Image (cartoon, rainbow, N blue to C red; front, side, top):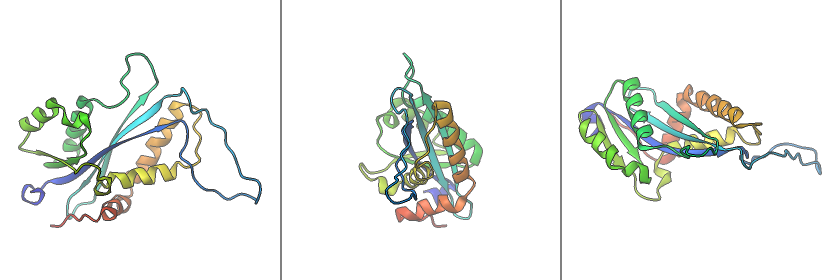
Length: 193
């Protein structure tokens, strides 16, 4: 279908990161393991929604949206259906092409308003759900692996510092198309002309 439409195949997924850094390995003198104390509790978290877009003959693209959750009353923890709608619209405008959008079965993705939005824009948008419990089919999982690996043992002082480092690391991935292609290859899927 994507080939017939001349569309990008877009895979979307979500992740989050708190102030407690992902664990990683490092070198140290024997018997002197480095320990970094962090304040992990009460600092909030960053929610990230990313979409990797592929089309044969074009370089892959990565788009993302961040939301900082500061644990304030009435503040949404994650993304709403409007946030996902905005991400789809921004991706469509940036690529200037039809989209075949693939994502998991998150309850927000199943919102009736998003289905209505897809129906209204069926000239350039097709929504498909990936099978349940199949993260190995989503190349964005590889993006999360690259992001978490690059942030291993990084201790952010506050939420703003965490947002800055997440943006910086995602920007580095965004401008390295071979990494985004590698994430697709890791799934075993191919996008053929």
